[in-house]
Image (cartoon, rainbow, N blue to C red; front, side, top):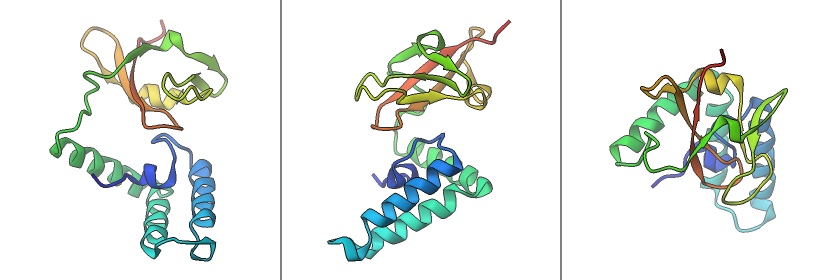
Length: 149
């Protein structure tokens, strides 16, 4: 399966524009042809990923297209079978909610913002679900939460 632009740049799917820019610069520096054995196609892919992900309209189109291609390949996008955590298992701070990744153990590897929660899907029982990836490894988890009263 082809790498997503998020994987190419090494950022989470909820990465901010500044995080994307930083990852882009780091990837270009570490993969520059003068630095060693790097293929020009990788540099081109890094540039495509950056150009797409920093443009909000193009990023949304890419996300929708990528989700559809994953569905066609039969990959799980519903979250069924993923480990489920409650929002109460996250630490809350002024930026949002975060927790240590259960796989790679990176502190704040899994983060959620208020905007992420606004985009969650109703779970059919009065709550919401959102699927989120660790910012450091490939682990995806489902987070269940309810509206504050």
